[in-house]
Length: 243
Ligand code: A5P
Image (cartoon, rainbow, N blue to C red):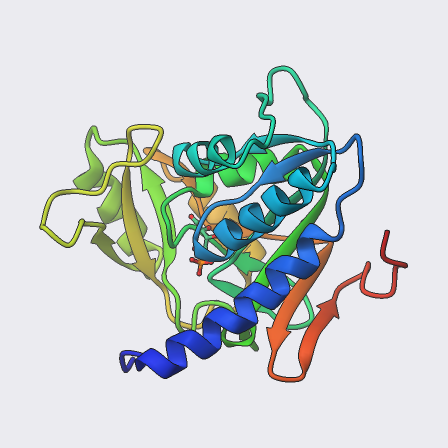
């Protein structure tokens, strides 16, 4: 994979920004809103911050410490899942979105455990991406991030390898081990093209030591895709009238 040039990066950022702005327009007063994590979700939270300043009243449930900090700095009121067991809508990013099924790989930022807990408690999951994230088959480019207990992670890695993965312990650029908000490690598992995401999900769920993984199957309501031709809407809600 070649490194994107500065002008490619700025073009991608424009597409992410358009999708993020469109996602923030999905919100209405009174909603409980799951706030995703990652660079695209960060733009969504910024756009929600603008709407809050214009008078929008929502309560946010953050999916990471970083998002919580950003939301607080923008004056977005926050609460916890414990106080709001039902979330109206969660807006998040993704590493890969499979055309047709809208199944996802998430967790490039290491937040998949909280993201999945919040998404599962949500009536709707809206995914915001630039067009580079849309794929015909999951796994061709992105590994599946698998969050594992620190204890015995090498043994857990061996079990994952038996499922056909090449697991790599996630490190920071300075060489120290990446630790999730929940205090766990991440094994990035390159499977290559995933023939059956639901079968792989069942296999991953059965490995002792696995806390959670980045396959999000059958829970996406709407995908907002930033493209050069504008923001495209994919999924069962694509033709739903905008609020
Ligand atoms: C965070 O752990 C992830 O699930 C992100 O939503 C995903 O990695 C997409 O991130 P970007 O928007 O930064 O590409």
